[in-house]
Image (cartoon, rainbow, N blue to C red):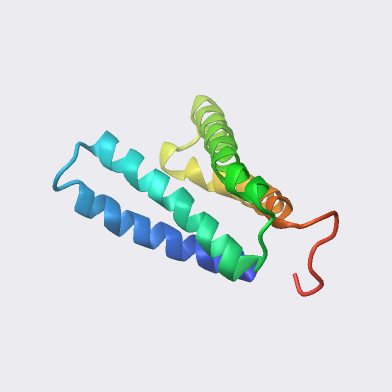
Length: 122
């Protein structure tokens, strides 16, 4: 889990810097989209080589974008419900992160496992 958190922090920091650079040449929406896709690719590489040190073939390649799409949808739902409840909008991402992080970790871990069991050191 610590490697997952560390890789997520690294991915977030790097993609934010890339977003700021892309803003010089692209609209905010296009810059965000390009960097988000790059972030999914980076997450795959980090999860495969650093976090789980495993590869489950095409299953893990296909699963990553689907996991991030699920995360985006669930996070958006949580943010929307939070704001509709009259709670401060600037805090809305926090419960989304708290709810989504363990779900994304478990789904990502499952996508990288070969067979039914996790590697012993994970």
